Length: 216
Ligand SMILES: [Zn+2]
Image 1 (spheres, rainbow, N blue to C red):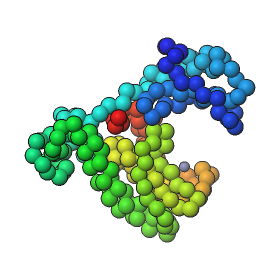
Image 2: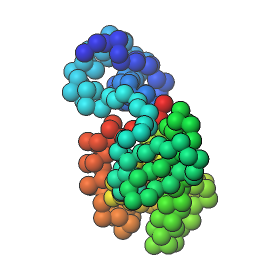
Image 3: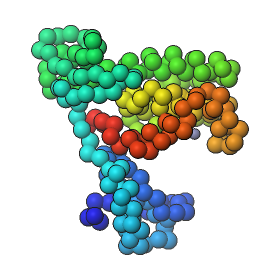
Image 4: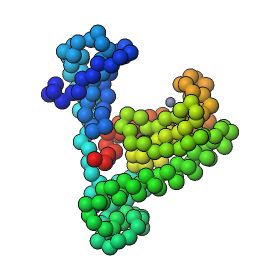
């Protein structure tokens, strides 16, 4: 492994060495202030397998590409005709100038995903009798979802390209935070009330998250 490929950062308040994957698929090593860069890299090099498995090259959406979208496999198809991006019989039709295709696919996914999320979030909130304040999509690579103390939920839009059981789990996780702002045993018990997919979803994300396309 080429050591230069790893971005090294010293982080205030950090207490241990950590490897993570950046927005552009690159490995990032974070270190507490007292650990020298050289020592950190020595440790990181022992995690070669993890790094190779998790780093990725950002891709652009392109014509002919197959993507999973809300549990359905679809193929991206371009047409010169001016039309609204839509799905018909497993084909995602994107019209207009071809250079805009990646952006249009992303915009379509975000728009539809937000509608989908609103519905699913309401369903699960009813079970716990809780209510969020805001629901937004974000472009994050290290967090799939978050819930603030004011009840604002946010999800990574690329989650739309994971299987539905993964989305179900992530929604359940954030909704459970509306009741418990921690990861205590009672929090996890609440998650179980909201989804049967916790284990399956976490396993899937661990193994496949790096393969989800990101837009550059
Ligand atoms: Zn959490």
